[in-house]
Image 1: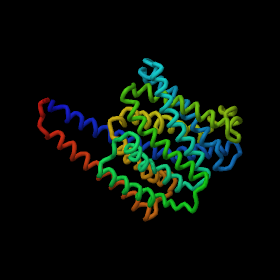
Image 2 (image 1 turned 90 degrees about the vertical axis):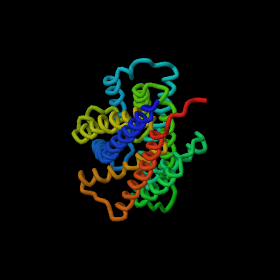
Image 3 (image 1 turned 60 degrees about the horizontal axis):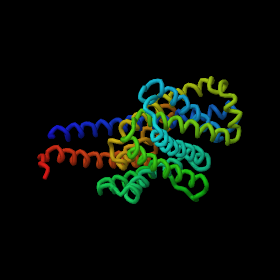
Image 4 (image 1 turned 135 degrees about the vertical axis):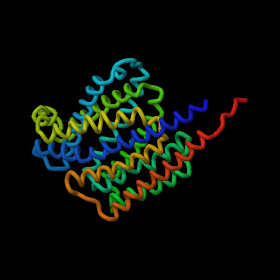
Length: 326
């Protein structure tokens, strides 16, 4: 029995590092998605900010990711039951719904406000854990939540002057993504992570294809898919999104997030805007202001505080003597 906590601790650390890697690719994905979406709109002679660009890209991204994932992982193709299908649909609806709300809302508010509202998963997750799952976060995690929320606000410079449809959609996306994080931890431990990832990708792909059919110029864009996808700025960024941001990041999430507390996972995911800003600076030269750097530091400190506390608890667990059952 003495070796079990050590192995568990090592697994916990590996899971946290895997989620950081997933967050890295999500951060890079902001730039790839922005360039790819704008390229789709340009190919359709539409202005930047038109719905069809990002939603068209989402549809192709998850449709291709579904096929690629099924080819790569045999476990994803076998062992399906009605319960598996139901669970995959639940996860896919959460993921697809959050992505559609996020991308549509982004066109109706500023990028800073949208980023801040999406990052409010860090508030929603512990609240859902407290009132719905009945597993409230620790005091240290709540401290990390407060610090990280302040950090995101400073980093994005989000100062909304009103609360319109764009803000409502952004807030809705945060709520749906929060449900997704908790659903992954609830469902995936009882299923094959490979199957659940394929289910999510397929459902999200179907949802975004339907969404594309419902927006202006969406049906025309789908009909002209061969021409649009063959354009270098589209296929290049689409390929990066499929391989790194979807198959890579969401694959890591499905295999490793269930080994981490949902609130802790949400904190780790808040490193995403830091990676996004760093990559945007390298790729486009857009840097962070001084106050944004303060926000980035706060996010990192919040994660360090929680990780140090988790490490301390792991050491105590490892050092505790085995107690024979009564």
